[in-house]
Length: 126
Image 1 (tube, rainbow, N blue to C red):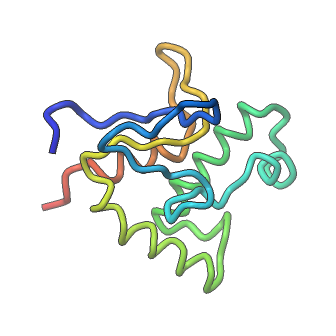
Image 2 (image 1 turned 135 degrees about the horizontal axis):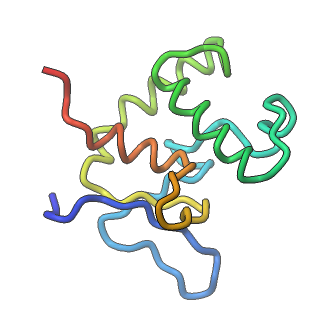
Image 3 (image 1 turned 45 degrees about the vertical axis):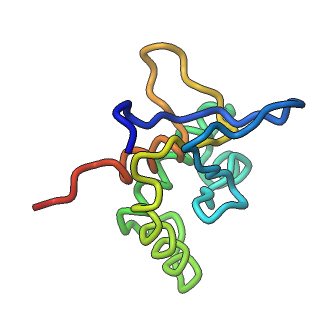
């Protein structure tokens, strides 16, 4: 594991962009993708802007991973959550790449990759 803490990388669609070494892509089609969408947050969550929707999606993702079934329930939701949680050790110490823009300096990071970074790298409860 690297001595520098893992970071969130903004994935790009521009020609020539390559995933950095020691980085895992966690966008929607990946095993670690956020099932909560911007469009969905605007519809069910009442978000009026993309940033509000992004914040709601990150909140729903964190809450859902911790077992809250208010946002998504059922066998598929439970299986998806278990798959993501089981894969967290694979993310430990790795940078994570998602398309979400980085926050302004001093602002919180409302991206599910930031949630995954925190969960994958926190110390296990003793």
